[in-house]
Image (tube, rainbow, N blue to C red):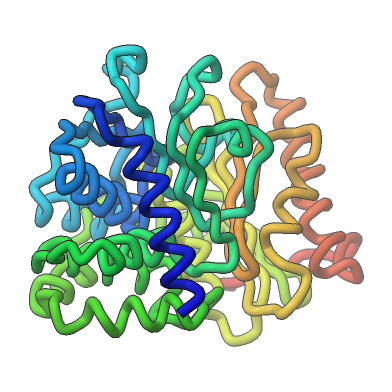
Length: 345
């Protein structure tokens, strides 16, 4: 009941920001995941319902994972590349599943969003925005948007229900990580409305041939240090593969920590995954990125990025060594100076 009252209060504040405007830009993180995509569509539904406002959805990077591309196709979304956006042309700018200053989105540094809705820890720049709803204990931003829709009494159609359901399932790994009762309740309420056949097709979408190239590189490069594994994908065309391969390695029954990294567009992209109760993946990545780059996350998964485009080969090798040692010091200190074992002999 308290959650519903909070949501109703937040919904009222949100509508006050949206009302009397004609255009809104919804910004997702670069290389958006299902939670971001579903949340953007959910916010668009609310804006259309309450203010008849014209919405555009944008992101930087690519939509790489097969499941994410299938979801975008199913929803019929016309996502706009951030580099083609005139941010000053919109009355309202909103962010979902990301925040200003986090380094994982393409919002210009001189643009302050009006609306920020997210389930990651609150960033300093977010506090300056007109409307914020940051619920870092939630498993998915889609849960927040689902609660808005339920509180507003808005009819959730099949496609939106399917997207929100998949957003929650994806970010919580079917309620297996970083999950609250709010995520469970939202999922249960959405499930009867969703298209289960389409949901299955999205989850088991066909992969491009390059997927197997990344899979082979991930396994061949994987090194084991005690209960931790580190692997590099080298230069990637599809940044989503960094997180996907990290998820894969964590399935090893003897591994409880995974660091996977790759290089894309002058940046070193990192993904952490863990089954350990402590420390949290988010805490580890923030420690690793201190004075190097940006990063954040939750108890069991996190990501970060470092700009390395101007580094020489020797400088880059030094940075990689520092990042790997920082990771091991945080999660498997006894293995910092130990020889690595190949995951696949």
